Length: 223
Image 1 (cartoon, rainbow, N blue to C red):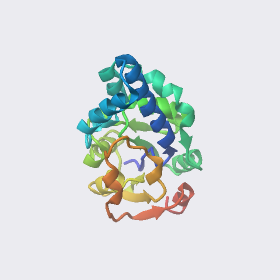
Image 2: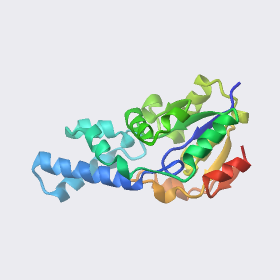
Image 3: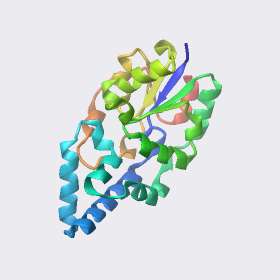
Image 4: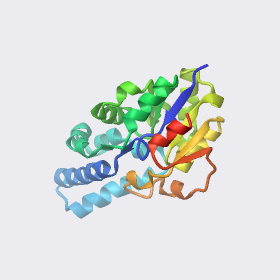
């Protein structure tokens, strides 16, 4: 069976906070322009839309947002990709893990068309053996379906596989259901932008992880 490393994206390998802030602001500006309403009203429309989807995987679906408001989601994303920042040593550690004989699996609450746009932009797509997005399993990571799907399609051995991420509920608790070895990243909380209260409570959960790290290079002492 294969040895896998399930990687989280935002707050673990990438800082998307400024990117997503800019994307959300552009969405609100486009809604205001399209509906011919004040920006403050557009903000409320968008926020009300998001609040209805809190704690659901569709909250993360920029494609659905674009279709719902009649906007070009892809052009808005591409306009702000320069604000996407890879965390220090992200490429290095992915290559290191791969050379150690592990398969890199990216698991994310983002939807596939958006995450591929972002991983392609950073040049990281080629370092992943699989990318599992929320629309692939129609669930948030906290439900565990990303891990179940990854273990199945990659024929992974959970006792020799890792989950690495910054969100206690999404990356650690859900991974423990499958007996994965867990690594909690202490540095990611402020590197993820939520445009409503969606999932912010996850970061206050007190969970046990097998390891805790303060930077990605510390993984070399574990794997």
